[in-house]
Amino acid sequence: MTSAPTIDQLRKKHLLAGILTSLKIFTLRKWSELDAEPNDRRVSGTATVAVVAFILVMAAASYSIRSGWNLALGDAQAHLTIARRVTDSLAPGFPQLGTVWLPIPHLLLLPLVQSTFIWHTGWAGAILGAVALAGTSAALYRICARVGIKRAGRVTAVALLLLNSTIIYLCTTAMAEPVLMMWLVASVAGMTRWAMSSRELSAGEMMVFSGLPAAAALMSRYEGWALVIAGTAVAAVLGWRRKPSRSHALKIAGAYALWPAMAAFWWLIYNFAVYGNPLEFATGQYSASALQAALVQYGVIAYQGSLGMTVWTYFWAVMGTVGVVPILIGIIGIPALAWTRGLRNDALMIWLLAVPSAFIIVAMYAGQTAMSNTHSLPEGLWNYRYAISSLPFFAVLGAMLIQLTVRFGAVRKYVIALVSLLILLQAAWWVMDFNHSGVIAEASVSITLKEETRSIAMVQYLRDHYDGGRILMDENAGGNSLLPQIGIPLSEYFNVSTGSLFKDALKHPASHARWVEFIAPADSNRQSGSSDSVFSALANNPEFLSQYALVFNQGNYRIYRRISS
Image (cartoon, rainbow, N blue to C red):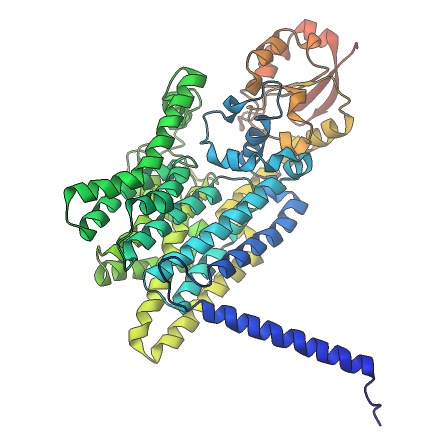
């Protein structure tokens, strides 16, 4: 015979039943919210989608940071360094933002990197990435709701975004792409609200809810500049359609473009004030055009001037980042969008999401953007991540296709089941081997290269043995963007970002720095270290060699410590 349950057992049973019932009620309520009709201000379910995205990135970051993968890409560490050196440097100030990259991602990182731990571990990038994906998910969901897509389609769009390993990984790093995506999709969401509202909204609402995030996108990555140009034209069309008047169309377009124009003007002024050239970011020593010129010379950008090769290279980059399923959706969805909605207001909102892809293709064709993959000429794994900005466009196409199945009645549930299965299978394929993502494969190669060149060993040695006295180091040299991993405050470094202080330290190292680090030239198959200005100035300097002792010599890396105090 079984004994009767005790009072404690009954209490636990009822407590568990109560928890499960509460969760069920909460889940059903949240699920029902996802099918609610949007009003002029509120779209039910937005907060739920944002919270899910935030939690997903933070969970992924706990693994990525623990394994060190979040700092695998050199640019991720460089972004953390730029943000930190605004306040932590021998020459602090906003000029430390530089001109190689646009400033918004670094300004958003700035408050987070004030904590040495959060900066050193890379959690600063992951926190910002989680916020960025939460914002992107919420804005994408709101776009779908406002163009008339119901619950199944909205969930499909969000699933295509959140079950993509590439964007989840990028959000655990400090890369700028998630920040761009957030502002870009937020700007389109704001314009969609204006375009689809049943009441006439003001020019001020266009300015605030679409123009302001467009300005942030413009100051995040250069895809944002293309968005502003296209968005201004679309805003003029929307204004004309709302009230067929040239003045009204110009008023709405001007309202949208005002904040982006002010941001662009500030950027020109900043470049002139700091570098003496308002177009330093476009024509200067570290500009994209200058950096790509050498690549063109060596034949790395073989697709320049060839539209066919450009599209071919970009297509395989999209395949390696966005995945097969969204591309299949796009093959069906793009003609379907053109046929069913044409250039209606709701369709214009979806087409705007394709602007970043068009910009990248044009930039590649013009030789202003370098990208390589396993199908490019030459082959390689470089800048795969540029293609990830196409993901929101494909996600909304997926939502629209699900919405189109409404007219097929009983077939609808089978189409939804098939699409859901394909999305889950693609997610599982990525999880089985993360290297199926081109961006993660690129990170894997970076980690392997760091092991071969012994950069990780150098990081560990300097972190463990540094005892003050400052460090002379060219952080711009290939393979030297490791300052967050080292974890020593940036005010301890003489490097390129310190300007004249760095030049003085190169001339008289012994009176400036107790430690000197540089990368020796690599073998003929690699270029890493060939541009290290500290190596060029000191490696064969007899006076330097008499004052310093070699304390670390592994791979390409050398560390010297001053002999006398």
